[in-house]
Image (tube, rainbow, N blue to C red):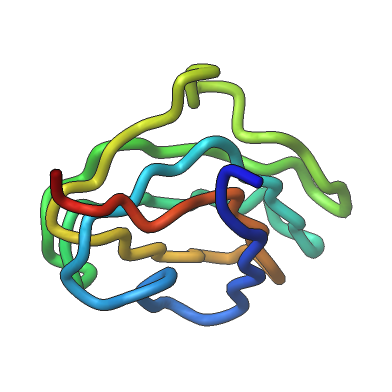
Length: 97
């Protein structure tokens, strides 16, 4: 297994705070409003924005702008869920070599 599946319903860190994480994909579930979700490199909602994805009202959609090889967040992965009801992240902790 490449990593794990992490369901996020409030803004926060995925896996471990401040540790490198590779994000392979994400599903965004929106309520009545289309959600804007920000994936940030770090541990807070003010850290560097790396990927932004949008949902569709009352639907679950895959984040379209995450490549197959994933996206590395060297300072940790912080997810700002915006108006999403849930964001499911497919990610793994990257060990330092």
